[in-house]
Amino acid sequence: MTTRTRTRALIAGDTALADFTERLFGHLPRADQRRWARVYLQGLLTTPGKKSVRRLAASVTESPTASQSLQQFINASPWDWDPARTELLRWVEERHSVRAWTVGQVCFPKRGEHSVGVHRRFDPVAGRMVNCQLGFCLFLSLDGMSVPVDWRLALPEAWVADPVLRRRARISPRAVHQAPEALVLELVDSIAARTSSARPPVVADLSRLGSAAALIAVLGRRGQDFLVSVPPTLAVRAAALTQGGDPARTPGRGGSTAGDFARLGNTSHPYAVPLAGRDRGPQRQCIHSALVRLPEGDSAGRGAQQIYRLFGERGPGRPGVRGGQGGGPVWLTNMTRHRMDDLLHLVRAAGRSRAVLGSLAEEFGLLDFEGRSFPGWHHHMTLMSAAYAYAHAVRERGELGRRSA
Image (cartoon, rainbow, N blue to C red; front, side):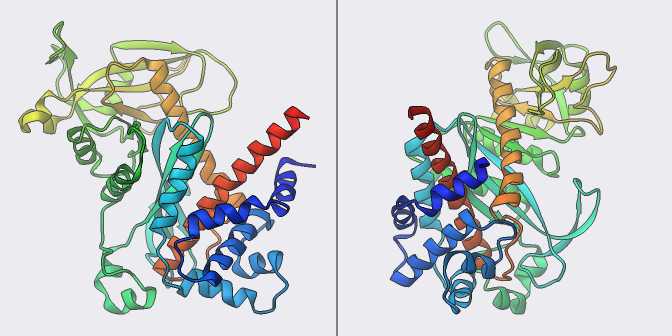
């Protein structure tokens, strides 16, 4: 029996699912809403293959009207998803120490033009223009795993400016067009307001964001520790620390790009685990790093004193750096006094979050939502995140049971 099949068997006979559902969705005012939340969760957890509403309903109940009722619950029922996400956050925090808040980006391919927020954009993964939705997810990165707890959907200006589109997709009056970097910051602000734990570092891939520097500056001004992947073309200036701990310019180095500094970094750090967490087996690699500043800080008051560590991976026998133009990631952090091993641990957390997105697509219906409404998208993402967290809890219980047997 495979791990996935064993997990489905455990869930099918798991009475604790009702308690989990009640905790996350107990705020729903009607008993039938809470019941359909449990049906949807159980369907996501046990239905193999595509997670359409029809298949989810058929896998859990024999009622001929279940599919219609479940569709109504997800796409039309006006329930608030924020309380459920807050409870999911607290449920995870009660069971694990959170090492980082990791932000991931998802492209949802779509065929038509009616799904909320759908638009054409270039997808670097596919290498071409695609018709899609663009979403952002915040993960709690734990020891060895990551759990999604909050989501944002990018709404192009055409969708928020057209009253017909807004009404048809039931877009909230509070929802406005925001640049991707603003959505990332909103995710961070939202979880910071709800968490009962100390703020961990923010880990995010900003390499495809045009205003990465502006977001970095905001996080720094707020005193938020961060480690972010930046575009190799990001403009930076050399900096160093004096003996007294104050920033100072590095002689002979003018303005340049993040990719250049990753290639010419003045400090080398050998290590035995691939930077991006790829499963290639232990091998000797080298991190080149340098202390830098953003040019915008030169005339920005407090920003003039902000320095960062920038680093990228250099492999054996290669003349270039994987963090250079067209290569692998270049990382920037304000945690300049942390050991490189600690920073690489956070980099691997980002790799795990990317792997979780693949698992969500394969096992939990990340790309299978068929509705067109703004609330429906958020409802599906909330229930899918809850299903993923619960499945891992069941696997942990099952693993503990086998070890103690």
